[in-house]
Image (tube, rainbow, N blue to C red; front, side, top):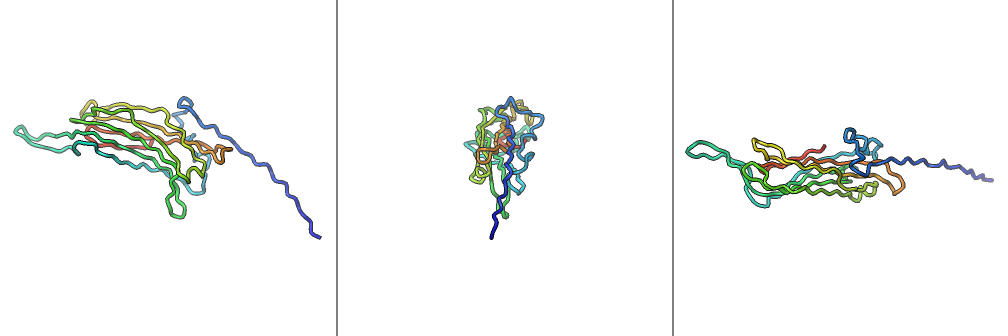
Length: 201
């Protein structure tokens, strides 16, 4: 005669982690505490981030160049308007295939002439999650603490402009447990010579 054994299942323990909802709640001196990596990645594979830059020239000239006249050589500064963009992608590898989970983009339209930034409205920023990211529980929660300012660059008082944006993400699986939060921060610099660069902070 067969006997059936009943095994009691231990109750699962779920720990909810608080994720800051407002910029005032963020400890800017200890940003690492908001990283999902501090609570363990959602998948076994390590996750990575990278910054991808691109731009589109609306009108104008490209790089500065040297010209000469009777007085000697002089630098000709380009002029024009363009849009510079920088995107941070969070991803991991599955069977050597790159799988993107989240992305955060900052876009800055600017005009420049004679080495100075002549027009730079507030930069736009947006984030998104892919199907793979949503399946892991990632959600984009908007932008916090935007900063915009001009600074001297290459001898011009208003030769540079910095747009700093922070995109907030939370990691809540199946809507019952938040495993952590993360942020993506971008400094997008544009210059009066039409160039730009971006850094992940």
